[in-house]
Each structure stands twice: as C-alpha cells, then as structure tokens.
Image 1 (cartoon, rainbow, N blue to C red):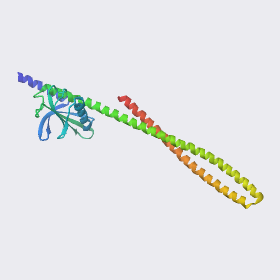
Image 2 (cartoon, rainbow, N blue to C red; image 1 turned 45 degrees about the horizontal axis):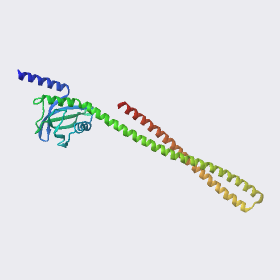
Image 3 (cartoon, helix red, strand yellow; image 1 turned 45 degrees about the vertical axis):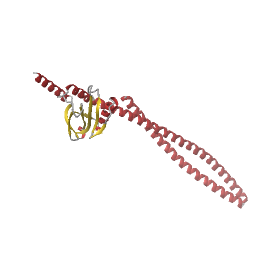
Image 4 (tube, rainbow, N blue to C red; image 1 turned 120 degrees about the vertical axis):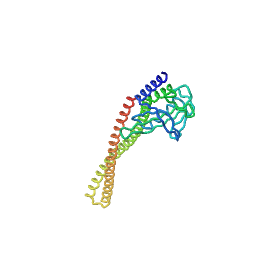
Length: 271
C-alpha cells in the first residue's frame, strides 16, 4: 500500500511537472550524466536567460562560481531557494527550435555533493523547490529584460540630450557668423555706394578737365568697386550656405527632440 501511495504521488508530481512545462531530464556535464530539470523560455536569447540566472545566483543569493564545461557552476554553497543544505548548482542555456519557434532551454542541476543529483525519486521536496524556481524564471527574465531596456533608454536619452546641446552650440556659432556676415554685407553695400558716388564725381570732373590723373583715379576706383562687389557676392553665397545649414540643423534638432520625447514616454510607460 505504501509503495502504491508513493507511486501515485510521483505520478501526480510528474503530471503536474509536465503541465508546468518543467521537466526532469538527464544532461551531460563533460562525460558525466547528471539528472536535472529543464524548461524553455520564449522570447529571450540564451545570453539574456543566462545573465538572469547568473544575477540571481550571484547577486541575490551571493553565490560564487565559474564557468566549466559549458555550465555555470557554484560548488558547495547554501542556496535558500532550494532548501537548507549546501548544494552544487550547475546550469546552462541553449537555443532550441527554428525561426519563429525559437526559445531558450535552461538546464538546471542541483546536487548535494559528489554529483548526487536531486530528483523527484530521491528528494521530492527539494525538487518541488527547484521546479518553483524554474517556474518563476520567465518572470525573472522579463524583469531583467525590462531593466536592460530601462538602462538602454536612459543611455539613449542621455546621448540624444548631449547631441541636442552640441547641435544648439553649433547653431549659436553659425548664427553668430550669420550676424557678422550680415553686418559686413551692410558695410560693404555702404562702401560700394560711396565708391559709386566717388566714381560719378570723378567722371564729372574728367568730363570738364580731361585730366589724365583723374582718369587714373576713375580706373582705380572702378577696380576697387569691382573688388567690393565680388566680396559682396562671396558673402552672399556664404550667407546662403550658412542659412541652409541653420535650416538643416533646426530640422535635425526637431528630430532629436521628437526622439527624446518618444524615448521618455516609453521609459515612463515601463518604469
């Protein structure tokens, strides 16, 4: 009767285990076959799941371990998530499935030492604790992914803010050049007008005197006026280019501000 009762308990437990998508399994650690437990985590890469588990063991439970034979290994340390004993804990993550059906398979082995691996047949209570731990893993992974996304958004926002400030400083410098060029152009226009008046006066003098010296003065003044006009044309082109840059930078700044607002809205939503 006791054997039958124990058998029924095991059948119930294994049935429950299957429904929870956590299974007892056998895995290779080097050449050694170890009994453990496995589950699949969807929508998460092996690296994400691996780091989630490593964080739990090393930051939450303060375990110290290393990588060995493709596993994270934590030897002879207390882990209250499983029980009151000291345990050897092994885990690895592997990508399984194809394309859209890809998921990450986690294999977790818990031993009481000397590769005496815990299973439902030798320690149902600790096995249930292990199952509960793995059942909560999907939530832990989502929490870790959320933390990563929050950090990523904060870094992106900081980078965008830095770009915005840098762009605004550049805009200020360009605007200063625009203002200076406008002032120079106004001064140039006044000088050209003065030179035009000077030439007109000289031409009037030459018409009356036909003085060769006055003729030379007219030629010199005309060359100076031409040089001033070329300078003004060059300044106009430079001003046009600077205004184009201001317009482009304004557009880019608006895009950055929009991105910052979008990232902040996403950050506020998930925090």
